[in-house]
Length: 147
Image 1 (spheres, rainbow, N blue to C red):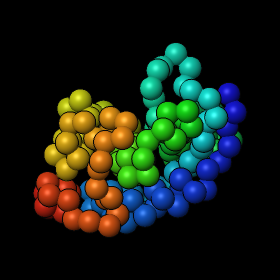
Image 2 (spheres, one colour):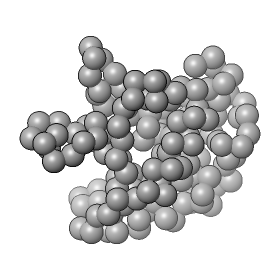
Image 3 (cartoon, helix red, strand yellow):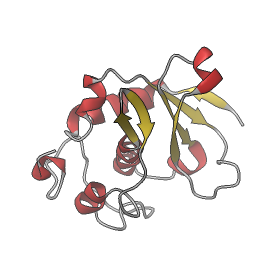
């Protein structure tokens, strides 16, 4: 697999953290996130656009981030720009906090409830028209939920 740091995805994720009130605590807790792009599909998993992992154990000696989010180009790049933003929102929602430590959160339903409510059940279908989470207030979004 070919991996490289993806500064463009990092900048986009920073904008998403600023725009989505349910993620602002990531900035408040100063959680360090590294963003990586893989040029091949995720091994043994079809149709995975991205994943989120906690940096732990001996890997902390090599990586100064708390979390690494990887986007897999063959799948990620097949989505529209707005869908890619939702994918990153989804991955960022996997970041949690417990007892002074970063953790990985599971989905609260098949996806995350707030994303499904804002984007609909089929937001991740190819060519699905989804709103831009950075430029519009979405009915049922985090702003409406009071997060």
